[in-house]
Image (cartoon, rainbow, N blue to C red):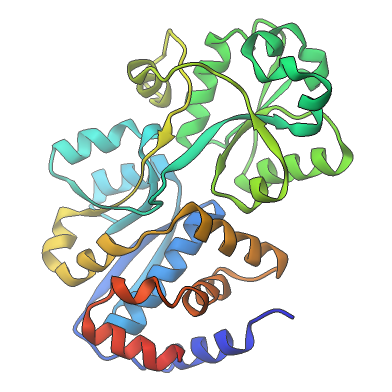
Length: 320
């Protein structure tokens, strides 16, 4: 049975405004993939009910969120920022526009090109670039790319060309959303059909479906950062590194709300914790808010250490 009765009560109490603290308005990104939505929902709950903030979530993705911060100074908090695919991050940090406060996925993120294990079992050569180039027909001649607005779309556009997939006849298919990208993997797996494309972990999807990473070789920082930048055309090849996944805040916000900046410096999930929450969310067809309260009621040895004493007391009373 889905564990939503206590969460529903907690959310109802939260809506009644149980927290009393000195915090103003806060804006935080909600990136358009599942783990980020969970991070945002957990952070929003803690800020509102522990610190008394008024929190507005801002739907976004990697590149637009940094453009918005650069041009408008908003949102205040950008979380689950996969910085290997965000060249502007380094420029903005050096310029003093943003401050990095946390590794929100403490193990880092795993990105790359993947194919289903059942296909590898039949054709192990497909785990190599050479095998992909020699056998496009085994993969229906299609590479599944990220949606527009995701930095990984830019990266894959350059790398698929530079590794030779385009010349070998592969169609580079740009998905319309993260949901359709995920659905394409699930559909292929359920029907045991070919699939090649980009994905990342931690995700409920790669926890559910056994996918194998393509061997892409060593990471070349210069090539990779150029490939991720829509204004730079990379000329070489690179593998995907284990990616740092950060939370950043604007410098103005860290001065205005230092307690919240300190809170966000502590908010971090291991890949195992996040995969568990994502799997629970998917299995129960739960909302992001329900997944947040699942985390808060399951990992009671984790999140209290993120809070100051007053916020910890408020939330312990709410969720006991």
